[in-house]
Length: 98
Image (cartoon, rainbow, N blue to C red; front, side, top):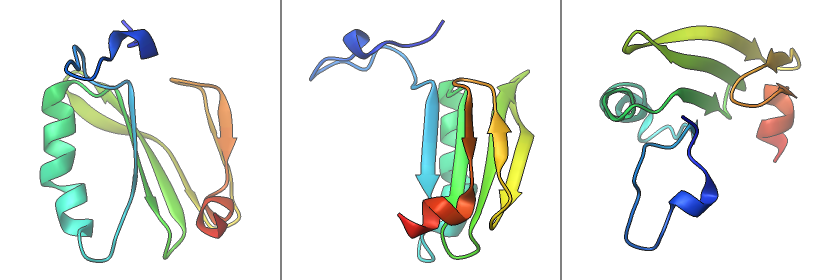
């Protein structure tokens, strides 16, 4: 079941987000990729995409069988086509340029 915008209220987050896109920071990188990743997994976040602006790179992870599986990866000018939760093509270098 996908969460819709109308499911969210000021006091209620009834379900995990469908997608988390996390821009990694040099200061919190380890936490983002370990403990926060585990919290997202345990909460049922279906898609987790960490973006590293320093490399630049993007990893596309999807929750399958209770664990995240890498379903796509791109570095620099190489793009990645993503089908779920939305059909989009992303290029990490474009993301890093902001």
